[in-house]
Image 1 (cartoon, rainbow, N blue to C red):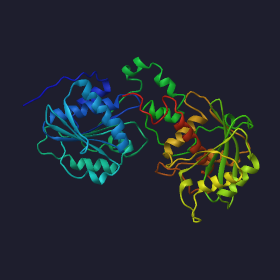
Image 2 (image 1 turned 60 degrees about the horizontal axis):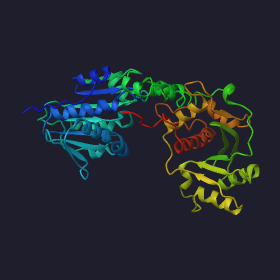
Image 3 (image 1 turned 180 degrees about the vertical axis):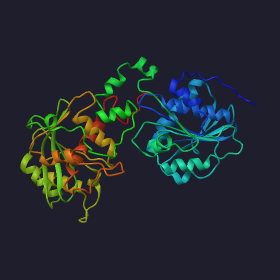
Length: 427
């Protein structure tokens, strides 16, 4: 028995092409705000109705993304459409009461757990942030002999020449098809927020804007990491303002022990100084900082990488060393050291956006005395065939730019403006 239900949905041209595709495996690639999540939800519901009584799966790269974004978006579409369903939280699955179809919700970060029940269909949100191994596991489960329409699909924002690009676009596997949404196609979004894309120019650097907003495929794993840096624009003689707090950021590396001293002036980052010590430890860095800036009356905020919380051979952590040093001096800095470091690509994109964003604005300047940091900006490169920074080519490089990147990332997390990366604003 066929069950029909009208669902209010006015698909954009690219969404319509995606839904009409009869490919066994299909993808929807598009920039931010192109309606990828709506496409995923409506394709999943269509397949659940085409396969009554059968099981499908919706996946996302991590459980928080699955719970807070993908799953929430699907439930919202079902509520707005009046689709009756029951959700079993313990099993993390929903049953559509019209068809008795099951939808499993699964995180893809532990892909070996995807083995099991045969599937009639599956869909993956933000596929470029999932591993190819997870996708292959799901392909292997697409084998329900009673399915009326077997289909696996994914939606994503481009992330360079990765496995998704290779599999769906560059050299498509047999049975694969990809629909690419056009930038600024989403009239629904632009009617509500006409300046949405224009505002993103102030948060993204030119390359990241091309990827996230224009939906272009770039290769971030080649060339300079900090491509937005220019000496003429980013190197200026900036001096410390005694009335503003100092921001001190460290990369906990023994040789060289590296840190930068920064102030933020009306939203602009001023890198005032660098401290680079050979064959030195964390206390040595503290002593040198105190020699230069001890007793700073406007206060000090300390940033660093997550390694600060790891035990040294002495049985103490770098953070404990710093806290003990300043306690001895009767000073109480504020600490902003995370438990987990940010993703490398996103941290580099933020740095580039500060150096020069897509609107041409310079938001970060470096004093000429910061010679090693300037060399970082001019020489640090991506590792070949990887989305990681090359740390082997020159052991003197990356430490200062890493330290500054941790600082920028933490300050963004503390006060992100609308439109900054890693925020899902509209669905």
